[in-house]
Length: 93
Image (tube, rainbow, N blue to C red; front, side, top):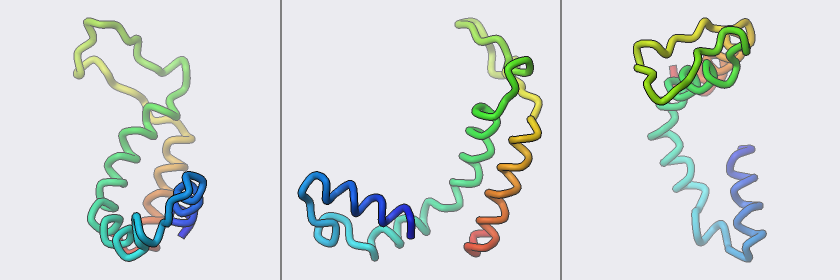
C-alpha cells in the first residue's frame, strides 16, 4: 500500500493522473510478477550496503568476482530476516 501511495503522490506532483497513467490493478499485477526477485535482490544488495568497513573487500579495476567476498554483518542478518518475514507474511514464500 505504501509503495503505491508514494507513486500516486509522485505522479500528482507532475500533474499526472495516477488512475489513468498506472492504475492500482496494473501495479498489483506487475508487483506480483517481480516480487519473488525482491528476495534475491535484497540478499545481494543488503550484503553490500550493510558490510562493516573493516570487512569490505578492496575494490580496484582488476578485482575478479571470485575475490569479492563479504562476511555477513549482524545488521545484514537482522535485515534479511525481516525481509524473509515480510515475504512470508505476503505469501510470496
